[in-house]
Image (cartoon, rainbow, N blue to C red; front, side, top):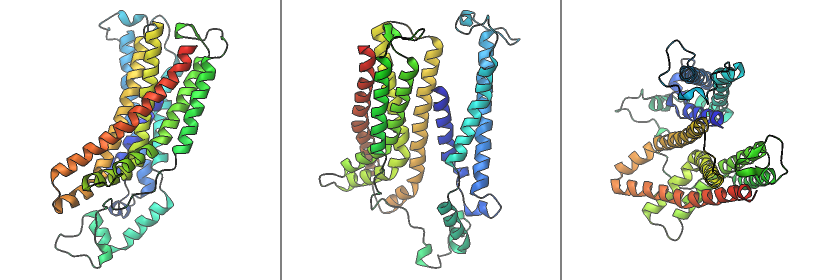
Amino acid sequence: MPTAATVYLAITVARTDPGTRPRSGLATIGLGPARLMALSAVTTALSTVLGSLLALLAFLHLRGDLPVPRSDGTAAGFLAVDQSLPLPAVLTLLVLVPLAASLGSALALRPKDGRARRLGRRTGTGAQTAAESGDMPDDRAPDSPDEMSVPDLPLAPRPAPGGLPWGVATLAAGLAVETHASGGGPQQGLHLPGGLAGGPAGVLAGWALTALGLALAGPALAYLCGSLLQSMSPGAVRLLAGRGLQEEARRIGRPLGVVCAVASAAYATAALYVRAGPSLGPLTVLGAVLVAGCTLATLATAAVEARQDRADTIAALVRLGAPATVLRTAALLRAGALVVVFVPVTWVVAELAAMPLARG
C-alpha cells in the first residue's frame, strides 16, 4: 500500500509538471511528445531513487549500521538489529519503486494520436503557433477570427464520466471479498486482531478492490456534485461553480476517490483496533502516515493543476468585470458540494467495511 500510494503521487506530479506538456516551440527543436515523455520518466526515476536512498540511509542510521552511532537505542526491537539486512527489501526500495514510478509516468504521458495531430496542425499555422508560444508581439493582430485565443469558458457541460457502474460493481466486489475473507475458517498463523478468523491477505484484497471502486466512481460523483449545484433554477454563481466542477470532475474525481478509500480504510481499521485492544507498531504507523500523506498530496497536486487550467477562465471573468467575491463564493460552493457528497459515501463504505470484521 505505501508503494502504491508513492507511485500514484509520482505519476500525478509528473502529469502536472508544466514542462511535460507538448508545445510547438519545443517541437521545433526536437522535443516532441515522445521525448518529453521519456524525459519525464527519467526525471521521475531519478527523483524516486534519491528519495529511496534517503529513506535507506535513515533506516540504516536507526539500526546503527552506519559508522555514525545512532542517538537512541529504542529502535533495536522493531528494526531487527540482530538480523542481517534483507537484500530483497533493499532491491524493492531502490529498484522496484523507482521503476514502477517511471513506467507509470511514461504510461500517463504517452503521446496520443489525436493530441499529436492537433500539435502538428498548430505547428503548421504560423500566427497561431507564435501566439501560443508567446513569440507574437502584443501589437500584432491575428490574421483571422479562427486564430483568436478565446478562453475556454464553462458555457456547456461536458459529458458525464462513465465509470460509475464499474466503480459500484468493483466496490461491491471488494466488500464481498472482505466479508468472505473475514468470515472464513481459521487459518494457521493468520489471525486478525481480536481473534478474528480469516485471511489478512483476503481482507487486504477486498480493501484494494474497494479503493479501486471508489477511484473509478470518483469522477462520476464529482460530476454529480456539479449537477447538484446547477439544480433548481441556479443563479450565476451556482452555475459558474457547477460548470467548473463538471469540467474538473475527471481531474480531481479520481484522487478524491482514493482519499475517500484511504479515509474509509483508516476509519474501519481504527474502529477495529479500538475494539480489539492491540497497539499499533511504529512501522505500521509510519506506513499509514505515508499512505495518507501521499494521497492527500496527490489530491492537492490535482487541485493545483485544475486551478492552473482555470487561469484563463478566471482572467477572462475578471476582464469582464466579475467581482472577486463571486469567484471565491464559486470556489467555496465547489468545495462544499464535494464535502456534502463524498463524506457520506466515505462513512457508508467505512461502516460496510468494518461490519464483517467486527462480526467475525
